[in-house]
Amino acid sequence: MSNEVKSIGIIGLGSMGMGAAKSCINAGLDVYGIDLNEAALATLSDAGAKAVSTNALDFSQQLDAVLVLVVNAKQVNTVLFKTGLAASLKPKTVVMVSATISADDAKQIEQQLNSYDLIMLDAPVSGGAAKAATGDMTIMASGSAEAFSKLKPVLDATAAKVYNIGEQIGLGATVKIIHQLLAGVHIAVGAEAMALAARANIPLDLMYDVVTNAAGNSWMFENRMKHVVDGDYSPKSMVDIFVKDLNLVADTAKDLQFPLQLSSTALNMFISASNAGHGQEDDSAVIKVFDGITLPGVEK
Amino acid sequence: MSNEVKSIGIIGLGSMGMGAAKSCINAGLDVYGIDLNEAALATLSDAGAKAVSTNALDFSQQLDAVLVLVVNAKQVNTVLFKTGLAASLKPKTVVMVSATISADDAKQIEQQLNSYDLIMLDAPVSGGAAKAATGDMTIMASGSAEAFSKLKPVLDATAAKVYNIGEQIGLGATVKIIHQLLAGVHIAVGAEAMALAARANIPLDLMYDVVTNAAGNSWMFENRMKHVVDGDYSPKSMVDIFVKDLNLVADTAKDLQFPLQLSSTALNMFISASNAGHGQEDDSAVIKVFDGITLPGVEK
Image (cartoon, rainbow over all chains, first blue to last red; front, side, top):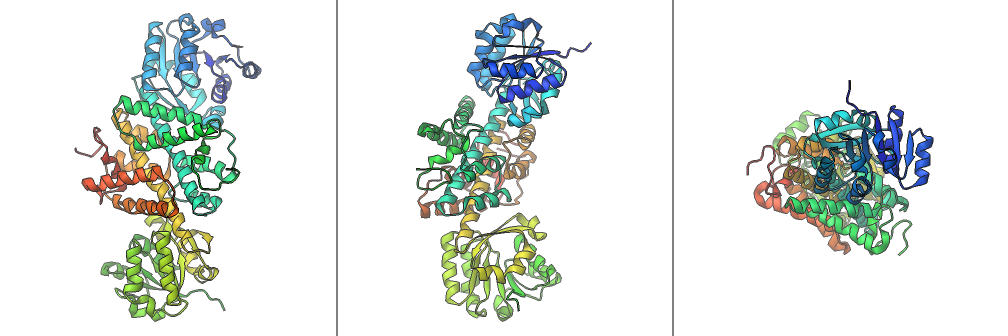
């Protein structure tokens, strides 16, 4: 008899969590939804969840696995431990932690889960809301063979690509953080390049067209600098998310005693943008740290 | 009667110039090749050039246009002015300057060309040797309508995409420099990310695979960090080229009084790599500025 999980509680029904939850329902799993937002619970209930609640203790005994898709380590600790959930789960329940957190936080969460005889998969995700909705996330995970094997139906349902980084908890977190280092610097340098183009009176739409058709392109340049060309800073992903993620990069650098000059410069750019009042805008608003230029849709 | 050029002298038969020259021959233009390298001249002669020489004065009166594909502004000045070529060309000959140079240098070259009644197109190229060979370069050009119109057969023959940035000489140079800003920072941050992965004991081939399948990817990461994974630093494009190009970015920043923190940080990384003896290696060797890590194929 397979030891694969048949039921899963999904904590955090934001755009990523909601997509993952619906993908699990589509794959035939028994899905239980947990969020503080009643509207999100109603949406998931309509989509076919077994049950939904603001309190995971309502059905903790029904769960073979838990997927945590909240924003940061503090929230992971709250939903797993402060609520009493970890203490009320069946022994050997697998907990897939998919928030972007530090390797140290991942290891501390593992220790606590182990003390309740629970199994952790350190499993950050990437791909954004669109890929979550279609079950095509990228998952970069580390943990025991048992964790991977039990969670196979969940990984199959939610991800187009699953990377097994190794056994040690923290490796998954570290790979995600290194990925965010690149993503964050690519947005910041995209902003630096487009700001220089504005300063030099190069039409920004033309600059965007040249770069996206040449070797200077990046996934983030193509995606985010379009917002600058359009002058649309409504948040898809916010400046403050990269303040958080590049701070995780800085923490990692400190833990490993390693110099990361480009990342720390980009972090300072996002912090400056946040302090100037742009923290809740789209992360492309990091370009607003530059004075002495005129940008589409931006009044100075 | 069309005013389009029928003959062109191509100065600088490196990988880009040779590709452009052959593309012009294939398009039916009369091509004259100029280089100091006799082997390159023989190759182009075999490919169907009208004539080749180390001295452009040998056939300057036959040329309707000149394409300059040398390495830097100093070389452009040498081949056009110190040799006496500009003085010996027919009036209204179009000179397409495709080296990566500063906007200031482009303007100074234009002034000198104008004094000989010659017409300039400020036309940097991108795409590498492979795209030059197939006539698929990207050209980012500025200049008069007359320059574009006369050079149309050359632009059609050598480029898949021609951007008309505007009339003012210097705009083409600036767009290329902004493109190089992105390219250079993307290589440097790719190195920073892969170095951190090495420090954290993440297998580099796995890290490369994750990034190239996710939103942290860039054209340069995918192309250059493969060399790091393979431990192969044989030069495709050298560290010292980005010392030169990011110094052009710094000059542009100074001219426009504009702060470019990421670019200047990346420039310092390439300078450090060059000073450590890696200037003639592949530009991915910028990763060798990091101590305290083990990289494939690199002995410390």
